[in-house]
Image (tube, rainbow, N blue to C red; front, side):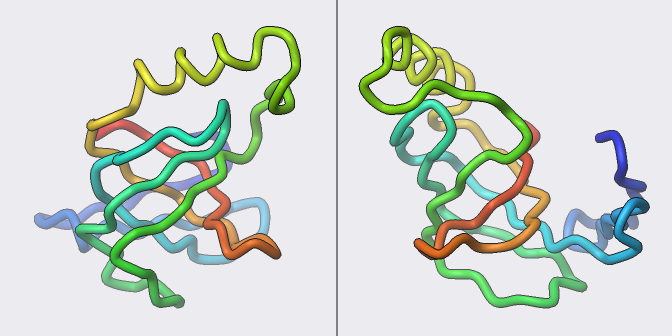
Length: 114
C-alpha cells in the first residue's frame, strides 16, 4: 500500500488508513464489484464504510482506479485490459482507499481484494 499506514481494530469498520505523504486520513469503502465499465472503472455495491470516514457514500458507487496507466476506450488492446480487470474483480469483495471524487461523481481511489 505504499504511502499508507494501516491500523486495525477487532472489526473491519475500525480500520483507519493514514496517508503519510499528505498527512490526512483516507476514507474507505467496501463491497462487491457488480460491473466492470472499462479497464479502470467499475461499479460496486457499498456494504461497509469506514468508521472514521469524512464523507458519505451511496449504496452503489462508480469507482475509477487511480495510479495505473490504461488504454483509452477503443484503443487496440483496451478490450483485453477490460477483460483482465473483469476476471480479477467482478463479483469479488473489495475495499477502496478513497482519494476524492472526479467531476463526473466517480470515486477515485485504489482497491484491494478482501
